Image (spheres, one colour):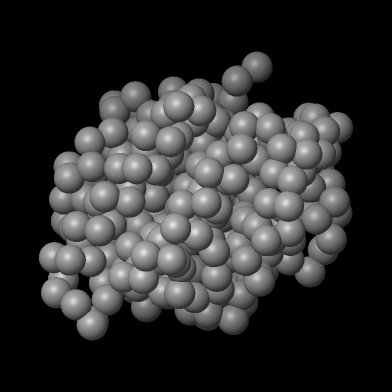
Amino acid sequence: MKLKLACADFTFPLLSHDRALDLIGLLEFDGVDIGLFEGRSHLWPSKVFKNPARAGVELRKKLDHRSLRCADVFLQMAPDFVPYAINHPERGRRKRARDWFKRTLEYADAAGAKHVTTLPGVRFDSEKPMDSWQRSCEELAWRLEQARRQKITFSVEAHVGSIVPRPKPALRLLRNVPGLTLTLDYTHFTRCGLPDSEVEPLVAYASHFHARGACRGRLQAAFKQNTIDYARILKTMAKTGYQGYLGVEYVWIDWEHCNEVDNLSETIQMRDFLRTRIPHPS
């Protein structure tokens, strides 16, 4: 296993996007995780999708100039998970979500990205749980097929507030949608008090990975407070043949106390920890 490190562009929201990319380049990362988060990131899908191919080419030029690659494009259609969840009961909203996903693939392809992430959907209290579940499976299967046509790896992030907030339902979803992969982030499970051992079976399904400090009750915490055994995770990845990027993903938003750590210092500490445990490609 060789180390490929990425840093999220949304780690540094107070900088302009160009300056954020400059900083990621100065920090000597290999790639960038691009956040297409409507209303809360540098790049909003509603603006990028006016001409996704051209926008993707522009991004690729910026990354090439800084010797960076696009590790992942992460689409979120609204600041809240619910309004445009992929399994929304309203057909019109699902149609728009499909359209934006196809545009995301076009953008990612033009940017040189081989990986796209979305959210897996939510449970809607207005209907039977199985209806929400089945609709998620159908929508994810459709997205998986679209991504395959573009030769792009598609994954979802199991997260707090989603239809798969815990490892067991996440594993069930992966088995219900053959070929689906994970953008795996232990912190969403650690925050709930779950041990690493319960999350570990998901590593075999991961095509992308998010790393940051976390502990019980905190989705994001300082490195010295972190309780996730990243050394063990790396050993598990070596055994399962993980080939993706390790994305250092600190965020700075007023949600889940995620604006209470020094993102720059924490990013450097996590980067250096990972570097000392896996050889970097020469």
